[in-house]
Length: 101
Image 1 (tube, rainbow, N blue to C red):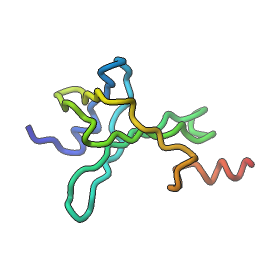
Image 2: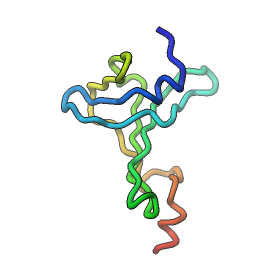
Image 3: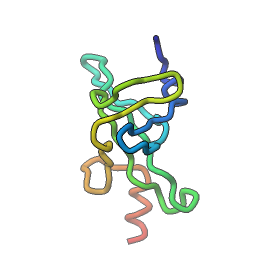
């Protein structure tokens, strides 16, 4: 089965052990030298219609994905990592948060 990025965006990500719906694929990170997919990214939910930024993003390593099915992507390892304000990378909405401080 071949899968385009647009097909991935329409698949729901589900944590198998807890049955938790994580969200939909918003972005894909890949290694530029080898052209291998490294992670799937699920953006955090918007707070108050996006005016107060977003919750932390989920980063799902490619190796943690068990099955990519027709309608869903199943992940059975630990819950995905959340990338928050403790990370060194700048997230969307960080400039607005620093404005409020």
